[in-house]
Image (cartoon, rainbow, N blue to C red; front, side):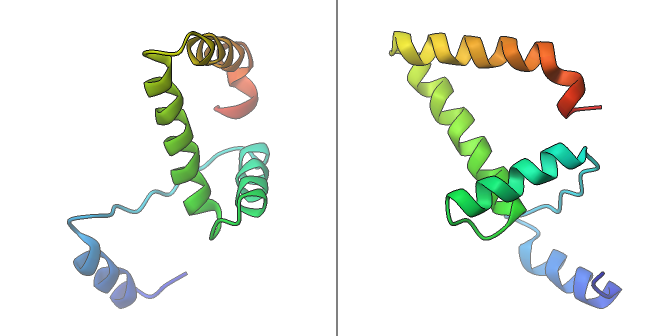
Length: 89
């Protein structure tokens, strides 16, 4: 864990562009983030979270004018809804 001084320095430097996100989540999610980072040559789980958000947002935007993207987004949302307890609890 970083020292208090190091944390405060990071916060001062990044106060307008970043916020720290500490998330308690299941091992399954941590493992999935590690896999994403490895598969797409990302710089760790933090960047994997950003990548997952980017992909989700891109799929939402594509769904506005692409029927197949809309269908996939609907399927993924329904599947997540059914399996939510595996991922978020």
